[in-house]
Length: 156
Image (cartoon, rainbow, N blue to C red; front, top):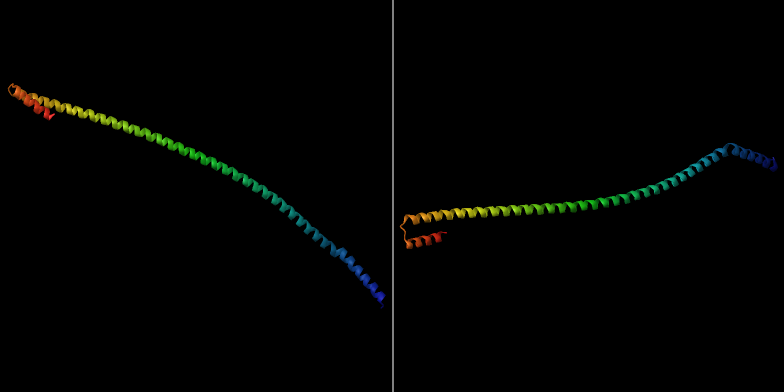
């Protein structure tokens, strides 16, 4: 065989191999490459979509956090106002109770003063009766009367 025949035979084998490759090997490879490119493209699209959804979710979370912070601040302010109102109410009640207790103590002191005066009056009346009784038992004498009245004064 000459070099021309070998070259020609190699050319035919190469063309058959190229045709076989183009017909049976290349389509599954291109199909696999196309599917892989499609998967990558869909994955990138899904990643972009997820990224935008994540940013939207972060915005919603920030909005909710801001809303809850303002709500918490208003609730704390309301609680503080309620606490102040309760303290003021308690102070008013304590003042009223104190005034009632003072009024009751004054009334009781007044009653005890009146009672003491009545007791003293009864004792003075008893002493006056006792003095009159002693005067009437003795004979009527100015000196004795003066002496009895002096002792009565000292007893009172």
